[in-house]
Image (cartoon, rainbow, N blue to C red; front, side):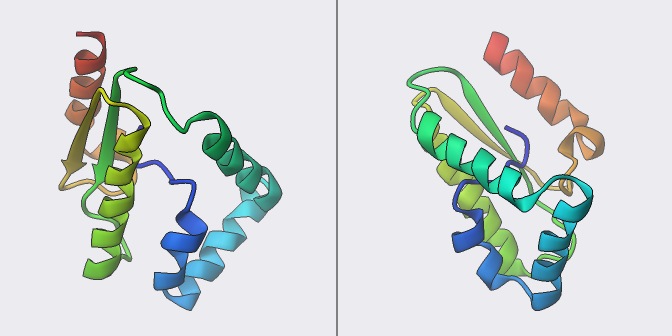
Length: 119
């Protein structure tokens, strides 16, 4: 999982962000997809991905998110780390110099994750 949106994002993270951030968050659905589709997708995560048992799981978290306060960054990392509960065979990596696009900013983390999974 690369800097993935957790199923409880709206309740656990969005309220700590600025009004401007929240408005931009909801506005993106006009361009990318509908909000209803996105919330449906999150509910599917909640329903089907409660546990992946011991399927290898690497959670890559961005450590340098633009527009995040230090408190918001810490909360984001906490939510990312909580995703580890999906599998007992897991690894958590913080890409300290990456924004949301870890695969672009620090691609070696993605390569290492794939190698760990197939290794």
